Amino acid sequence: MVLNILEKAKRKENLCVEEIEALLTISDPDELQALYDAAYYIKEQYVGKIAYFRGLIECSNLCMKDCYYCGIRKSNKNVERFLMDEEEIFKEALWAYEAEYGSCVIQSGERQDTAYIEMIERVVKRIHEASNRELGITLSLGEQTEEVYRRWRKAGASRYLLRIETTNPELYARIHPEDHSMETRKECLAALRRTGYQVGTGVMMGLPGQTMRDLANDILFLKEIDIDMVGMGPYIPHSDTPMGEEVPPYTDEQKKDALTLGLKMIAVTRIVLKDINIAAATALQALEYTGREQGLKCGANVIMPNVTETEFRPKYQLYDNKPCTDENSSMCRGCLSGRISGIGEEVGFNERGDSPHFHKR
Ligand code: 5AD
Ligand code: FES
Image (cartoon, helix red, strand yellow):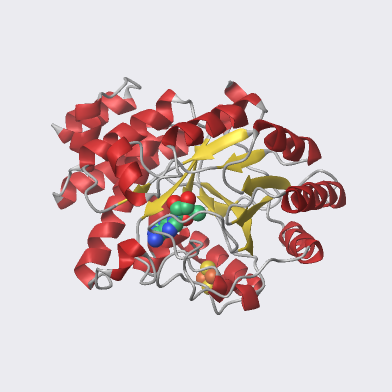
């Protein structure tokens, strides 16, 4: 059954929700390997064996939102809040450029005040110009108005990441406070498309109460909105959050299962969506040291090495056990380059690595 579905996918036929669910439910080790191999075959055909680096700048943990899973939610009093100044963000982006990363990602908690919006606009413009318009600039700054998205796009940002987190409305409502709305999130994704960004979204997998059918529907949603990039990762409890308070940290067995689910989602997403960019999320490495390269072996083609100054890193803990908090940017560059050659792939240095899907549209 599983092999038939994989053959069908290789023939480029569409898979239905039951077939996607069947792939996500695989537990037999041989079938699992067949799934990963099929995903890698499709990855090689559509995007090649190149891992693109996106230097990740986590520029502030100030957040107006209060998501029940997230370590930097506004009610968490155990977080020391920080906001990098414009110079610091600029310096880190230029570091990524000089380290030959094709692009950078500016990420923070959500803020919608004018001062912040203007600061981002200025720094994006400066990075764009200082890198001779070469460095790709991705933003991951939450929900904003279409006008703000347009201003930042005009300043030089070309990609935007905004995760939908889950497409099951009941589950969405259980993991977010009432002021959140999935409809708003979807409207933001539509506004990003209208304003000309390469648009990325994704989900968390392994949320309490989430089913394989939910995840299969999530993948079909990615296809339906014709997404260019996907960033998704396993949910990992954070002890200072409502969802993490009650549960003990993951056992080794739970970590293994969460990693496998993360890898299966990457593989099936590659099989279904084919020519998009898929990131091997940092959270994979919180579950196992080699988690990110395993993600590449299962179909991902993007890695986001952290380029945030080490002093800020421990303050940006979205989940427990986040890796690379004691390291600096050069250490992560060396470490990840080594891991990528270790699996027989190349790093796409000095290449933006745009989503091929975006350019075909
Ligand atoms: N576990 C895994 N991922 C998380 N994120 C936030 N909190 C957690 C957690 N506890 C993810 C969300 C968000 C992204 C920036 O980090 O998906 O969109
Ligand atoms: Fe940061 Fe290995 S990637 S230390």
